[in-house]
Image (cartoon, rainbow, N blue to C red; front, side):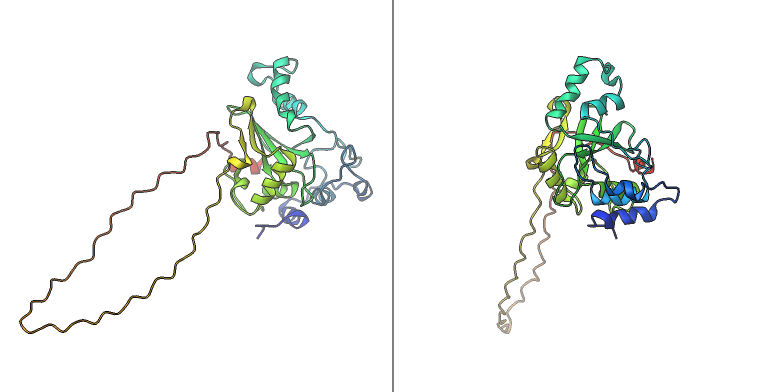
Length: 274
């Protein structure tokens, strides 16, 4: 079971499910490899690169690994050319994507998976698990950005279907499963406390907007019923008619909880196979 696993232990599950056609990063290169600026790699990512340096497509040459970071706006202009009729030279396009960089000013590394969406490792600050978040930008309808996975370990495990959950929305791990706390920490550390940011402020949600978990009420111990002695029926006294139990009224089905105004991004499990 992968539920609740993190770090190298979770990556090992993904390695066990992957193929054998791999190209490891040479051990001597990996030993000194860092992100530009000197930020360290997560141990989970190191373990994966020691197994295969080609799958992620982050290096031009696996035998001479060099990270090539992009800023968020640069990544979006390259991956979504002509979005909304705009071009890379369009000042409006630069301004619209650039608004996100007020929060996402770190380096981005494109990762596999997505059709009208793109996933990227956001190298801001490490969390308490020693991970950076994997984020997604989706351009279906209103463009949004959100944290999809709390770390590279969960991302790669999901790619090989060993993460211990099935995804239905991008933001799912904020409210369901074993990674809720880790997702909230990444939102605070690397995303300004946001869950989702939509272009122009639409579909934007913060951690405090998430529904609060329901508390299970303490069970009350039922009071002991007092035994009542029946009085003997006198001779000639009529027996009372048997009282039937009152049929309880059917409870009306509870109304569905009102969701937030933002659009829940639909995401298909098909991306796992891409």
